[in-house]
Amino acid sequence: MLAPLHKRLLNDYQQDFPLSPTPYRDIAEQLGVSEEEVLDAFYELSEQQMISRIGPVIAPNSIGSSALVAMAVPEADLARVAELVNAYPEVNHNYERENRFNLWFVAVADDEGHLYSVIADIEAKTGYKTMLLPMLADYFINLGFELNLHD
Image 1 (cartoon, rainbow, N blue to C red):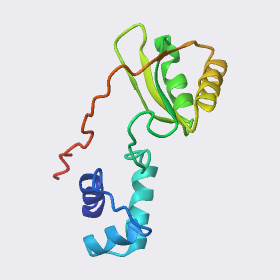
Image 2: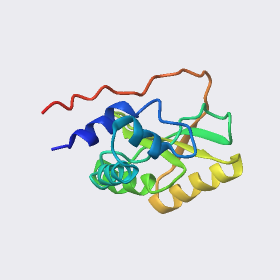
Image 3: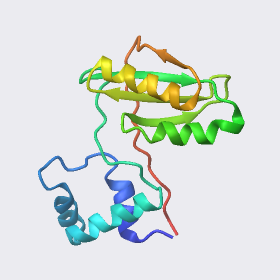
């Protein structure tokens, strides 16, 4: 069961995260708690794997280089490969799809050379080829989710 502070952090700060030198202090002041309580709550949410990261979403290829990547991974090996892919800081999310290409992820790097080296490393470590999909059109999807966190 989540504490009220955890629920507020999950619902209220998916978007409109304070852009300041002291964002956690700003959140604490908004919620009437201490900065340490906010940091502890985010740490606990991370430990419970309810959040994977706190960071910006930047338009593709506006800074550095990015790619949508698909892999065809045997079902029996999917969890291992997904965990390995998730370990790269350049991968901001991955997900399973019902297709022969069943593992998809977005990779972002500071430049194209770094991006391709990450993809090559993923192929070497997983033993599976990747398919890079170029962005032909840019669509904005609001990824904020209203969570039903009522007890």
